[in-house]
Length: 141
Image 1: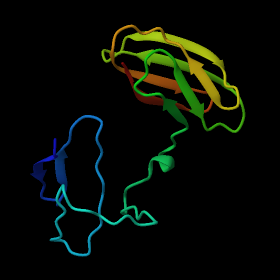
Image 2: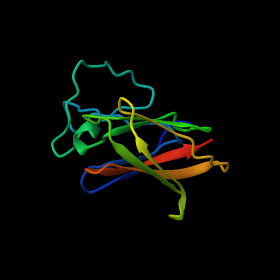
Image 3: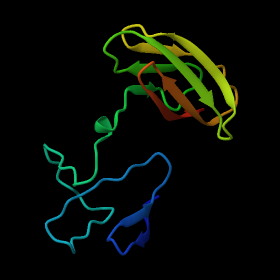
């Protein structure tokens, strides 16, 4: 399904409705009135220019990668930690109800979770160390 244009705001922001599990691409043009349609071919570039005020994901303090996501049974967590340390994992459903909690030491920055979730849906995984804590959206197949 091609994207459907929904709104162009007063700040020249383009809001596009996309199908699930798709993505958007920021394209910096030479002219304000440059238009790009769904079927256009865009030549890739070697470097990415991040517009002023937009931070790349790495700059926002992401310290873990979750995979697979969506998951079926086990969740692998790869953490960007200087050394192995104790991590608490807590999974909540959309209503905020805690459905899984586990604590353990990472092994080479890796952690394996087996939450035993039977119901497919969207959940939140909160990973906490002594220094930081971050929440990730996860999907159970």
